[in-house]
Length: 256
Ligand code: ZN
Image 1: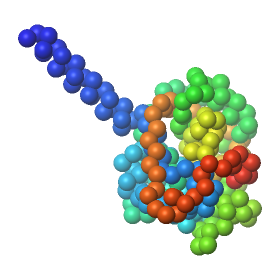
Image 2 (image 1 turned 90 degrees about the vertical axis):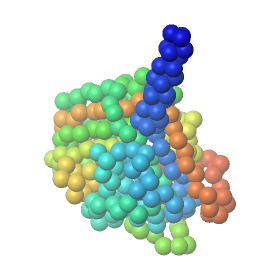
Image 3 (image 1 turned 45 degrees about the horizontal axis):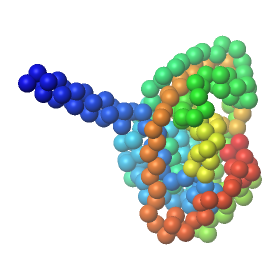
Image 4 (image 1 turned 45 degrees about the vertical axis):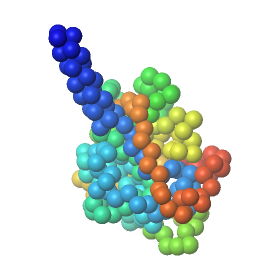
């Protein structure tokens, strides 16, 4: 009887653990970066659905209508004018990655570093290059340079063409947050290998996809994530897309 009882308790505990893990230690992603590079700019996942899978993340909108940043459970749309707009639950995304953010490690950098130096600093914080990471870097920045992308109409041009005329925004002495992801090289084709950051100002009025920065005093939070959930579109555009191409050079032009 005693054995039976402990077995029951064990089962309950195990279920409890895996349930918590299911909700919190998963990077949820819709579609793939190569689909975006193959002009799949429309998806069927709503932001109402997306918020069930995470409170922090980044991505874009249907018609490639700007850069998305999710922070503390609120999603923002940085349109081609650089302004952050509220996101309606019924709006949809063709590409996004979110997680329920919980720092596994935090660190402050009190010296000023540029984006390249920041990445090297973050490299030194990663315990392995074989899992996924989400980042929340908040504080004061001496400089931030971002871009957004203008809303597109069909027939869609390639992303590499669109970013040739991408609007650029610069911020000086600004407070705000960088939300980011890091994926291993072996994930190329699925997501952006290495770092990918989107920025939003502290007053949540502006931001974009990060191109360059100079930190002042920032606090870094890293969420180690060993699970991923990939949700793929079920439509003809996605079914007919060419997703196995080697896009490293294109990705370099589009995301860096
Ligand atoms: Zn981006």
